[in-house]
Image (tube, rainbow, N blue to C red; front, side, top):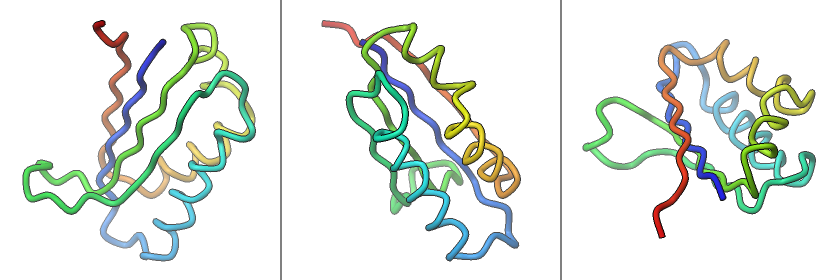
Amino acid sequence: MIEHIVMVTWQEETTAEVKERILLDLLQLKDKIPGIISFKVGHNFSARADGFEAALTSTFIDQESLDNYGPHPAHVEVATRLRENTSKVVVVDFHPLS
């Protein structure tokens, strides 16, 4: 199993509507890409986030599923819009310790 975490800081000019649409489109990837066990997205409400405004966490069956996720057309489309509207993105992938 693999955990995939993404945290973003939006560009100042990105509207609330665009932010919400991107997050909702990310959430739909679970139904479009094989190998995803769970997928969650949301807006940050904590002052401890060092400026990050939104995050997603997803769980993949295995490394192959994560490797197939990146180039999948559904992911490429929404990830492109995400990058166009963010000033900072951090990605962390890890195998959970048992």
